[in-house]
Amino acid sequence: MSKEIPSCKRFTGYKPCYPDHNCWEDGCKDNLPIGTKILIINLDAMGDILMTTAQLPALKKKFSESTIYWVTLKSALKLLYNNQYVYQIFEYNAESISILKEMNFDYVMNIDKSQRSCALLNLVAAKQKLGFGLNADGKIFPVNEGAFYNYNLGMDNNLKFKINKRTGQDYLAETLELDYSNDEYVFNFTDEEQIYIEGYKQSVGISDNDFIVGFNTGCSELYPNKKMTIEQHVYLIEKLLKNKKYKIALFGGPEDTESNREIYSHFEGKIINTPTNEGVRKGACYENIADIIITGDSFGMHLAIALKKYIIVWFGVSCWSEIELYNRGVKLYQEDLFCSPCWKKSCPYDLECIKMIDLDKIVVEVEIQYSNTFSSK
Image (cartoon, rainbow, N blue to C red; front, top):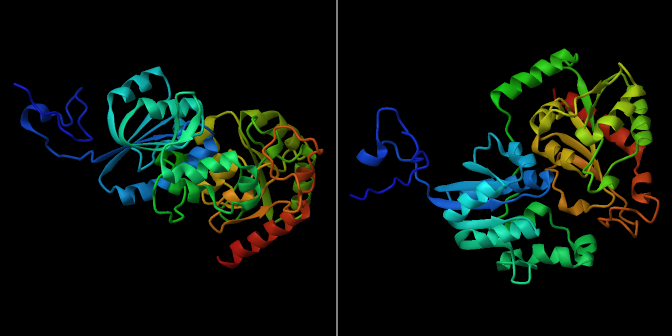
């Protein structure tokens, strides 16, 4: 006799949901409805993945009874751990694709303008598809009207670099046909990570009364011109160390190990050089020790936004208007520089946008935030 498979988030078909109950034979003991099934495809750029998490509250508001699945690259999986909105995370690989092809979704939402992500949107069965797909010629195209503006930003440099004033969250909400309400990024530490953070702070001599100025020194190797030079970092740290009120910490990923070591060599024993090779979750733990973070437009910036830190961020090749700091920071950019932003990987103009960063203004902004922090205590 055919029996109905429970439509419940707890039921797997592999083992009992509860040791003393057979849901298949006797019916669901404690039904947790699947509701609207939503798949998010977001593989590219870890900073973009953090930014996409800001859409999750609006998704849950629109589809209160729903189950959200997310497929992403192995390097980004841990960014979504302990996220209260995401039911299941798939690593982008052949095994996951074979599973997703057998599932039926109510919505598939592809954030990425890349062929592999667009092809996956085409492959997965869904009642409605949003974002970007792939046509018969292998060309990327918008699959719903809400994605037109987002798509056109990639086609029109004047629109993207000069006209657009909307943040990435704003036009992504339109892409996904959601009401935009400026929701925050979603990133949560586990209890164990919170304990680790406190232990690390004690191990490097940070007390509750200290004010930690963090430097996110690097950026993706894809766009190497999103960071300041070692000499600029050394200048800034020297200026800040003259003020005995601050403690300085360096943050970065594996690609920043050598440059951070060189910066640290100028101040050995006077600043904190956090590990760079322990993965994104530990990297987030280290970045969380800071009260203020000085950074370029990078994954480290997005992580700082997710951690709700005050941020001083400079922009050169990328678009400052697209970044939402949630009233917790200041943007530095050269609005009258004809070539910026440009998104070029190499610069024909001797990196003027980086050389013109107002380093002394950064020092002043740190002082202002220090005063604001301690005047409110």
